[in-house]
Image 1 (cartoon, rainbow, N blue to C red):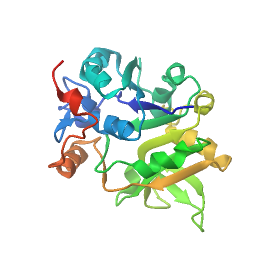
Image 2 (tube, rainbow, N blue to C red):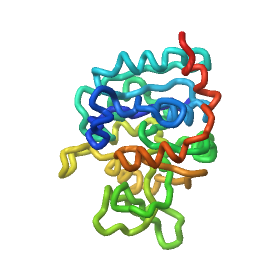
Image 3 (cartoon, one colour):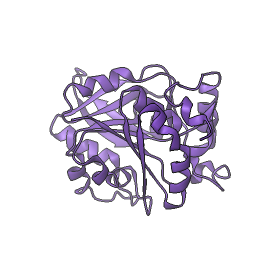
Length: 253
C-alpha cells in the first residue's frame, strides 16, 4: 500500500504578522520559492506522488493555483479546507477521507530542511507499522515538542509540548510517518489546556504501545513560525537551488 503525503498549511500565522496580513504564511517566500514548496519537495523526493494540503478555506484556491503544475512531475495535489484551526492533530484529521486507510507522511508547512530526508522515509517504507518522528537537537527546547529517550536510547519514552523544564534537547521537527490507523487515534484525542488537539497526544498513543520510532535530521532544520525564525530559515536556504522536483511548479501554466 503506497504512502500518501499530507502537508499541514493552515493556522492563523499570527506570530508572523504583519507578513501574514494578506496571505497564508506558507505562501511567503522562503529562499528561491514559496515556503510550502520545501515540504512538498521533501515528499516528492521520497517518491510520494499523491499529496493533500490542508489549509484555511479562504486560501484553498490560492494553494490550488500554486500546485496546478504538479501533473508535470507525475503528482496529484488535493487541497483540503480546515474550517477552524484547532491544532496539528485536528488538521491531520481533516485528511482522513483522502488517506483512505493508507500510511501517511505528514509535514508541517513551516518546517524547512536543507537536505532531502531520504533515510527517514526509507526507514518506514519497507514496513509501515506504528509511527516515526524526525528529530533534531535544539538550543531552545522550550519552543518545541521535546522527545525523551530511554537511558539506553533504544526507545522513545516521552514527548512533551513546549516544556518549562525540558528533559532533553531533542526536538520533534514537524515531519511524521504514520500507519493508516492514525485517524482512529486522532478521533480519541481530547483538547489540551490551550484548547488544541495536540500531535504530542497522538504520538503518546504510539509511545504507550512501543511503536514510535525516530530518525535524526540530515543537514540543517529550521522552524519558520516566528519573525525571528522565518529570517533564520531564509538565511539557511539562501543560495540553495530550487529542487528539480518542484521546479516545474515555478513555471507559468
